[in-house]
Length: 166
Image (tube, rainbow, N blue to C red):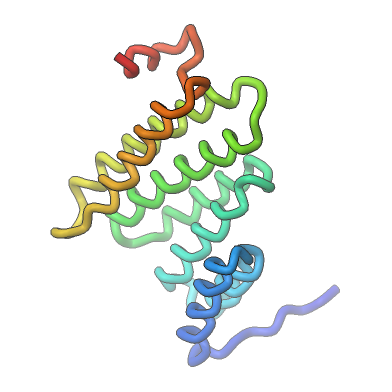
């Protein structure tokens, strides 16, 4: 139908700046599109991969659960182990938060499991973090506070993870 046009390799830095700006303006679809354009000409661009992962996670509230799998697949392309681990935590945390915002059903138990998964990733990322980078601690604390704040964010009654609340 339409053939996409390619950007020049020289346009990549400015395009990445625009993608980040669109994310901050709550325009994740535009950021996603720009990142895909960048990755078309520079397939291993780490900044584009991270921004794309974040842009996809920005859409979790209104997207299908398959978007989480799509974003997780992108993690495999990150070359830095700390970033792979840290952003895996971000994805789990943001999916949990999106579920809570959607409300209803067993979402509290699923969100609990996702927050615990995120916290596990943050704990691993903390061990890999460069000196002076405490982002995994900040995110771990946020997940812990959210679990404490919302009484419906608990494991299912038959879930072995229930002991984690003690």
